[in-house]
Image (cartoon, rainbow, N blue to C red; front, side, top):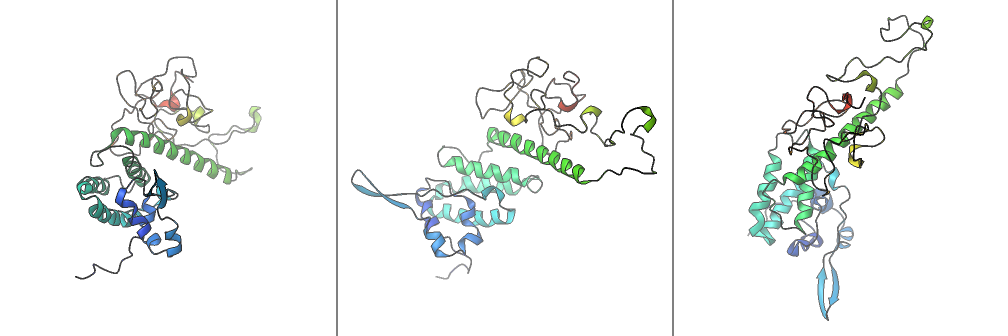
Length: 298
């Protein structure tokens, strides 16, 4: 018998948890960095001995999920190679299911572009599999849709904050000989207005160019779509996408259609190549504009 190589070995404290696999095991504990860490740090994660009904039994110690959603693709790939070997050793009947799940993410066309989204999807499937009898080889559409909404909202918010920071850091010259087509002369009786961005998504409203993004569900400006609890649009009309009773249910219109939130954001752009949602206003359903320039609430 010969050893397979000189790679880092999974610590016993982590390996033993795969015997029962009754707690979520973050992939951060299967990376090269953790497997090469000091034994003292690894031993603190060992299972706990408890006495139940007079019998001594082991209970898996909770593992912190910190930094799992910040993993790079290389770290994720490292960890999955070790996880597949552990599944083969302790749960061989489940190996084909998990291998299919892993491979499906590896071959996604948008894996590089939308890596945080696919990392979150993989993490959530593994976390839920501990307490729920789900089939990891099947694409969990409702779970993915929920994560997609959060991911898109976070990207839009980050983009807005980035643009706001860039605008605040750029000094506005007080005098210039260059022609400014978007400013009024001093004798107009009004103060010079700041020059607006010349590029806008099709159908955007100039009044919104320098304002906050509107909520994609009610059209309000005081909150994000994720925290929207409104029952009507800001003008009092009924919502097109009413809030569902179940928290994990996506918002749909009366015909069961979902709307692209990236397209309805301030930038008016969908970043998901395989988007199957409606590219129409999430406030009124009109395809001629998005939620940021919807005339029904302006």
